[in-house]
Image 1: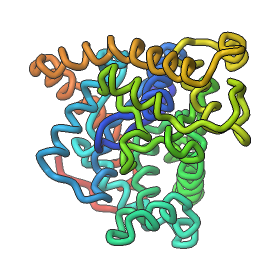
Image 2: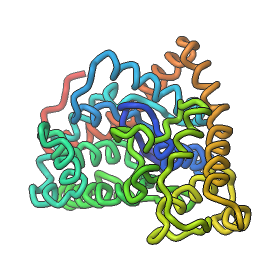
Image 3: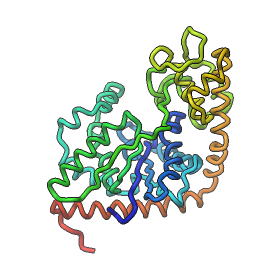
Image 4: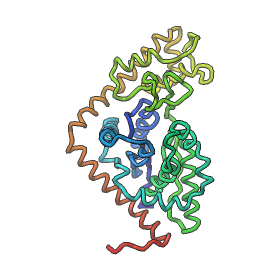
Amino acid sequence: MFGEKKVLYSGMQATGTITLGNYLGALKNWVELSNDFPDYERFFGIMDLHSLTVRQNAAEFRKNARSFYAFYVAAGLDPEKNCIYYQSHVSAHAELAWILNCFTYMGELNRMTQFKDKSSKHSDNINAGLYTYPVLMAADILLFQADSIPVGVDQKQHVEICRDIATRFNNLYGDVFTIPNPYIPKGGAKIMSLQEPDRKMSKSDENQNATIFVLDDTDTIIRKFKRAVTDSETEIRYDEEKKPGISNLIDIYAVMTKKTREDVEKEFVGKGYGEFKLAVGEAVSSALKPMQQRYAELLTEKSYLDGFIKANDEKAQYFANKTLRKVQKKVGLTERIR
């Protein structure tokens, strides 16, 4: 839509600390996709507007957003080749979201399972932003005329409503939006809680032993894995239904060591859960250490990060505003005098 290049788009909420699940399920894949899709324009947002559906401490929130930017880069996303930007720095997100709200039906939003899940967890703060979250997400994607959206299976419903909104708008006003397709990376791992392996690993889990954070030190990582819930058997075998805890650890070890599940099972034939848990902890710690070191360096290089933030914000604004102006004209809003 913007030229000869197709567009890849994704992002992550800027709250709390990045977990191992965030890293393996999203960020690690983005780094690989930046190599697999070299001819695409690639945008990776720090989705701080989405984060406002939960009450934030202002100072801590700003610090976390900066931390996320540093870790995107530390994980291997080159800010010279990938547009890493802050969602709130591009006002077109909020402007397009309002317009798209007017083209989205209540029935569609009522079917969103994530709203139901989050409402049950935050019954004291069921706000309109949480309800219309999928519309802002649609605006994020459609602003950049994205062709491919790397998502987990649990986010597929949001891409579907985005496609529905875009199709509805295009049917009324012509070929305005690119219809995006969800892209679920084959190597993506869905990382589960270490204490409740039937639930996803979450940064908001009250049980700190359930979640590995990417900035945890070696001792903390190994201690958490040693306490991971498994089962009463002794065989290290992949079986999501009967052995969810061990299966989760196998997935983590496999991704960290670049092995298949079958390779992991063979490696630990005849070995106990204690030995396996220790090996998983050591593999995770070893893989995260270089990123932790680079992350610490980046936080001291203020001018280096600031330069990329400014340049990439401007690039994101340019792309987003081209779409926004076209949409505004289509719906009949008065053009600005420039």
